[in-house]
Length: 306
Image (cartoon, rainbow, N blue to C red; front, top):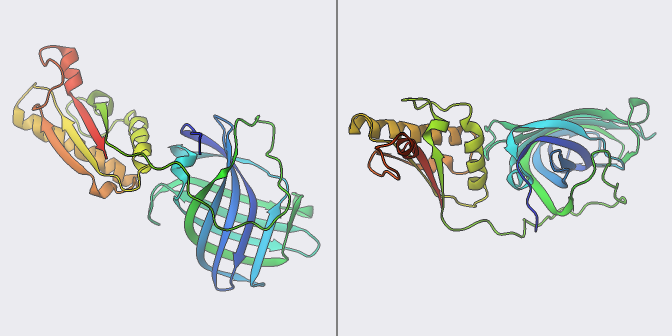
């Protein structure tokens, strides 16, 4: 992978193909075209899941020969790299007739974390069909059934289309049964230590430790960096200026560091419950506490990622 997309909240998604097997305990994979609406980059994502369901046939597939995109928004800025290996859940019901008419309804819930209890990051809901139901250009196995699957999102790094015009659909592929195994991104995860310094005046109000709304975008960018690592070790340090009592400043700096960790945990950031927090108080200034500008620099949160 020699390219990198910027995080975005504006996306469009279109179903491509699906395969499911089983009649009570079921497993399957589902492919989607996902478009970053800010850069117009398009990549294929695959959901692999296992769960339960009911079907009139032991195995079924479907293929859309033309893609119908639907706009959606993620709960926070995210990217293709961030979505890779995300936990996801899918509920799908479909019917395919011998005449070629079909209809399906499904909810794909990509989670903002790695457990099934994480909050939603991106939710795709759709009801579609062909023939008398409204959509055409699809083929598949005659079937009727419903599946509820839990699994992972895999990004197909070898199927990338960059900078497509807004009005162009991706070119429909020749029909071919999909190959299940996909390789992980060829680019290795980042290594080495990285320190991020955030101004406390941006994150918190005066003498407070609850996060401001303005803090979310700054912390979201840090979360993105953390999630790119396979086994991150993170330390969050709170720092204060020398105004007031030293003991109070130390306590406030610790509460602010804990507030940042709590936010990471709530968003399902990888290994967030294991993050270390430290309150340094006024003990490690980086600027002159004798000036307002210096004191503002000393009021900060530092996040070290290894």
